[in-house]
Amino acid sequence: MLSTYRRNPHKPFDPSLIQDLLGGRDVASAELLPAGKSNTNYKLVLSDGEAYVLRLYSHGDSRREAYVMDLVRDLVPVPLEVGHGANWSLFTFLEGDLLERVPESSDLAAQSLARISSVQFQSAGWIEADGSVSPFPWLGVRGYAAEKLETAEVQGWLGPEMVEAVFRVLESEQQRLAELDADTSLVHGDFNPTNILIREGTVGGVLDWEYCHAGTPYMDIGNLLRHTAVKYHGRIKSGLQTAGMYLPKDWRKRAQLADLTSHLEFLTSTRSDAFKRQCVGRVRRFLRAFEG
Image (spheres, one colour):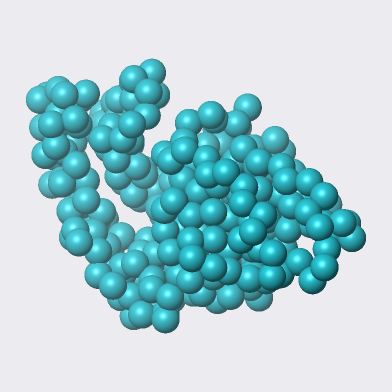
């Protein structure tokens, strides 16, 4: 079942935004798409039967997202932008089932993840619309985690003992963290089963690139593992390897270290208390994996 949580409220559909792109056609229907938590997406069917997605931005930069999708178009299927304006873009509609509904295809998603990570940049950071990379305002995975651990929200949810324990792990894992922070691969940034379409035995689309950046692919791997039942984790591993990604013996721990940042970020968000309790449980499991 799709999560009902959203970071930003849905925006209303305004047909005047795309009037100049219709070419005399009418909008026959406009369906709000439930997937996605930051921006608003409508499936539009025009009077000639053609389907598109109107993306209304509350977060991210439409030009930056369009640049990265063009960058990976020959590697993974992504929507084609057919028009844009201030804080909106119109894309072709891609058919398929969300991976969330067909998790047995997780190996196919992992293959796409590996192909995405083959794109390399000169440094880590946020990818800009012109292809340049702006440094993160924090020092990599360790720096981001440490920054979140200092916040009152995280300290309140974890308590002093757990916070101290996470700091100990960060200290003991300096070598792995340094290697993660040295990565400059293309990262989708939200590579979870609600952003991946499966169609006829292949990946039909990778959607929602607003969190894309240059960094460690273990961020995407950790995200995919977290959102996929454990019984399919072997498929994720085989998919990554099939697509040519080298996985060291400690690949799962690397993914857990990268994914820790998400758990801590969620604790500072507007997510429900019930969800945040789940995050605390994930941090406990993280500590058991690293401290025994």
